[in-house]
Length: 321
Image 1: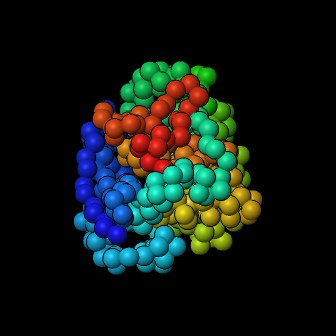
Image 2 (image 1 turned 90 degrees about the vertical axis):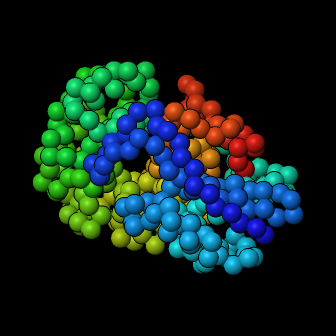
């Protein structure tokens, strides 16, 4: 089994800003695993929030032994971007060698399109209203917030897209006091969900707090080991493959979360269609799907995912799985 990892860069259609900074391109790592003349593909986006870089993740992948199974991989690397790309490449390889689709190998129903959120990046209220108006035809908009001055942005987006379903992502940018002040306005403006309002290390403040809008754990939820610390704080968990360390753990996390009474959101980093493809399997039946990474790009992989009025479609075999 031969593993190679290469960096790839995809230009964004426009500047993308969250509370932690801005970017103009998506920098990803592409993993190729070859065995018996067949190649499986996977993609990851190193998570700077957790100290990951292109270099550190590459080193993790290059440090793997020459041969291992997908099951063995789960203990060879921790949950994170490196394991994600390798795990997904191994699923792709297994599917190609078996002449089946990944969903068949995983014992899942055939996947269908899922309506996906479209993300409006953090900007001035005026610019966010313009973004919202431009995308008001979309059924689900996600607003990047996370500052002390977000009330005007909320009002502006709702004015720009009066009929769209809206979810909010604070990216750990609010305090408990700010969230408490904003909560009734989230209800008034018809916000359907708020994602990670408080820093992960400070989210005990959510215990016992009124949650008139469902609250979703993102940075506070990585894999199944996270779940026990989320009870009483969150209503929904956001599953991202770059956090879970791949499709294998993501599917197990979804099952465990639902059994524990959480609803499930499936999200993404800003990456190409190759990164989103495995996540479309996890997103089946999710309360929120947020796999809009390719919609934010000016360029994408060959055989990209299809997006239309039905949502994001599962990948063609030529892309992945």
